[in-house]
Image (cartoon, rainbow, N blue to C red; front, side, top):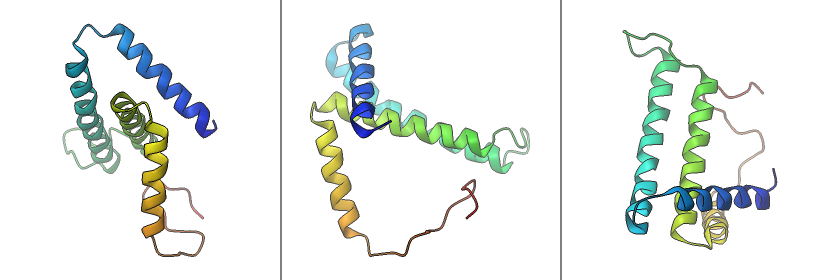
Length: 119
């Protein structure tokens, strides 16, 4: 999916959520921001499950579960940003440019974390 299609999908999600909401707009905005914390907690739960760190549950998740939860965090953040500003794509692009400009030049083939494909 190209970046334009991604942001069009996010716009569609935001419009759908707006249409279906029964809450005042200010409360809806706050809840969309709080949803990020919920999704981040699900990432933590999946990591704990993927590493088997809960003795009661053992290995209850896979790294694919972690990947999916991280995608949920990203999408939720995009929806929250778009809820706050119609210029979400431009805000994100500019922020990404600033962050990338601060990084030192690195050789290709960086390190992957757990669950990353082997090089």
